[in-house]
Image (tube, rainbow, N blue to C red; front, side, top):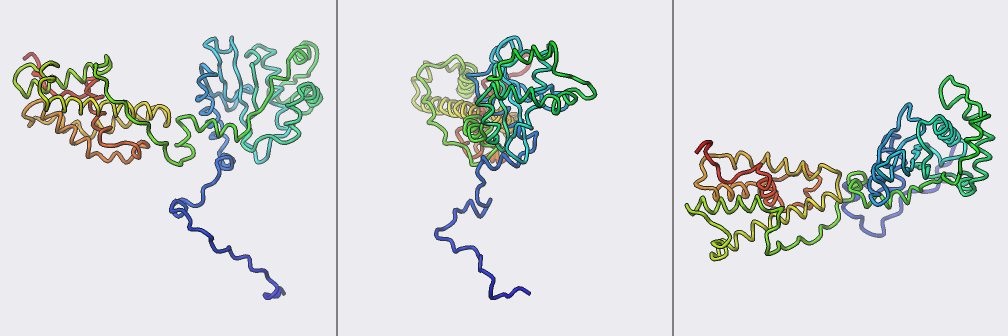
Length: 367
């Protein structure tokens, strides 16, 4: 029987500093390079696709073809619009419980050799192995010595490739296939480390959604220029129509410039529009595509009944009521809520007016 007196106390040591409140809500943060280790195979491929999509200067188009029958291609990155007829890279995604070893990749090299031989696709410019637990020491050494990698791939063809590339088909490495194998420069094979991928993924609009941690600080909003930009023409026209509807006569830019209260109001509306445009640009770089458009849709749903109500005395009153309603919308379901302010929400109304989705002056049909 174990003597209780002989047991060593391994109780947690007392904290030497206060824990952040975020630890209470979500526990101690898990480093991102460790978090990817619990991704499913599908999530790991999606992560690589997200990373590659962020390499805009390197790739024209990124597609994912993982799954059964992928012919050894997971995430395909085309350098030009010529697609397979131009330069392209392949990312072979491996989500295993261990760092990649040579035995994990022979079949993938075999697929590349065979399918390029029969003309399914051209040889890639680069072929990267991306393992969720990185690559092991032996594989790293082989990838650094292409001639040794080629020799060992040939030696392992019989066991790992011959009857495994295509189910039920015997593919010996002989004659024309061997000539094709010999002609391939094995320097095309390389790898990407998890650390490198995670760091570069942080510059994509998918990073905050994938790993959390909040959005970066928004840059300062551009002050509206004195000259109306072409992209502003319709919502500005709608504002002038709203002023005219209130005044009972046409109000143009010269009349606005002569009335200080209109000058201030007009600048306020344009500033709101530029706030929303700033948020649109920020969203483009920090959250997945469609996120800002979803926010616009939520604003529209929240203000459309107010805008369409028939009790407004004139178009300017309708605009004011709609913008006031927009400012009260919580929009708590949007990933952008933490960086969205009232001016943004009101500016989105002007974006919607710019597309004629919202109209401040209701005109009778045929009137």
